[in-house]
Image 1 (tube, rainbow, N blue to C red):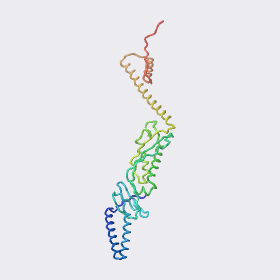
Image 2: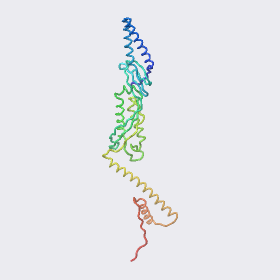
Image 3: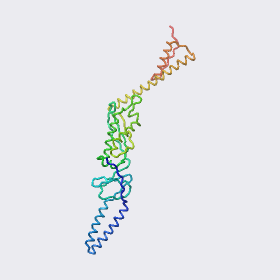
Image 4: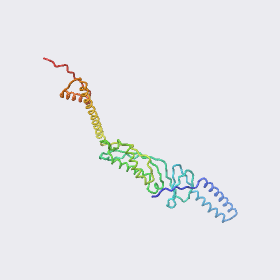
Length: 289
């Protein structure tokens, strides 16, 4: 693996002054050689002038949060990251790499989750280059590599978990967002680390059932919610009936035999568990003919 080598370039402003001074001296020498009809002086002035022109190709402008990768005839020579006008060997091949924080949103991927149900999922990945040498030399196109590998990691993660948990303790995509995001970051970083990229954040931006099963899954969720609610209602109703019987017995309000208790329990459960308000019926006795 090629690792980044920090390299300090020469101060560009100082080199600019030197080149201007040498260029002025070369110009004066050329003029003096022509006037003095000195072929040697003219030749030297021309050679030095060509060298000055070549040296002007060594200037490089480094912006903040940017690195310039230097190569000499294919060999990696280091990375300059000091902001400002710098100067390096004019024969170096120079490639700029942004070190700024960047982010992108993946496409909405259609994936089969753990139970085989098709879902749509997308994520936002925040990343930056931390090793310019790996980003340039270890992968062909690091930006394209980041996009494709992030989608691959998201697809792989979504296929290992259920969309919704059906029992306590199960990790699902919808109900355990924090855990899913942490595992997504680990998986994306594991894939992008070889490209000199650090993942700063990865979060789910879209999560839904695929349109073809969205209606059926909505009915399933509603049914699960209704069952859970009715279970709570029944548990509460049984507790209230038990409390009512205990209080009647302790305070001796009325003596009930087993048959009357069973009727009372049945009536109270009907009242407490009913989906709609109950209508009381008052008995005022029996009519005689």
